[in-house]
Amino acid sequence: MKLDKTTKPRKDRGVLIEEGFPGQRLRVLPVPQIRAALASPATSHLLVTDAGFFPRARSHGMTRRTGIPQAIVIVCTQGTGWCSIAGTTHRVGPGQALVIPPGTAHAYGADPDDPWTLWWMHLAGDDLVDLLGVTTLTASSPVRELTDPFRISELVDESVRALEHDQTDASLLAAAGAAWHLLSLLASERSPQSPRLSAIDRAREHLRKNFAEDVSIADLAAVARLSPSHFAALFRQQTGTTPLRYQVQLRMARARELLDTTDLAVATVAGMAGYSDPFYFSRQFKALHGTTPLRYRGHAKG
Figure (cartoon, rainbow, N blue to C red):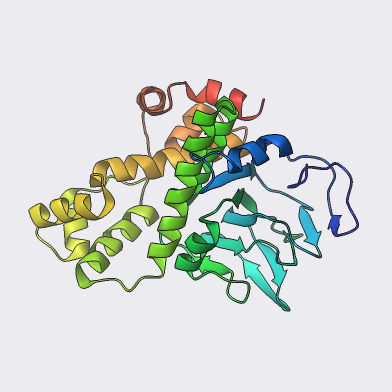
């Protein structure tokens, strides 16, 4: 399955693969609906026109000699790929985001030996150029290392789930909201960090690297070099959530990735996500996602 809306390559693009990837998710708005949404006050500012998830996308690639009207955002969570843009070829690896501005000629593809797993979306709208400008990601500098790749990929997932639900105005608005949040996070990634925020970043990085381990507030406060009470208050102020819930988000993001990209048993997925009790994991998963791990897996691959 390709990232554009045609099943045959046009003269301005070459496609390296014609079929889909096992476990992929893909939603593409019809062109008439895109036109209508861009004329609507609610979705004219930012619109997700296409979004998806491609696990282990072997032989995946695209060449567009004149670009497309939308911006392309690709978040790599595993494996590697590459992008050629503005005369330079960039490597794209795990924990990195790639942004290709509208109307920019480009080519990209998966590494043949270690193909990337990617979440992606195409964006349009009246405010798109300004939002991209704030991120400072350009054709000459299109790749960014992410401090929180799980959170960024979760936002693409939110857009995909909104469009999977249906393609009503409400769902388009929900997908756009997640995309707006994603661009805001990309913008904040490049901002100079204050000493206090750097302390929280250290704790978040520790959680990301050890999300499957039991970590206490005292442990995280020590990493941040703050008192436990000060750390907990500052963490919530900077992230909008508690350290425990942040760890749950990381664990569930890992669980979803394993459910989407492997055939591992739910008990094995639970263990790899940091849960020693698979029944507790299933209850937590259902509380957060509204469905069981097995039903989620069936929906994701259906």
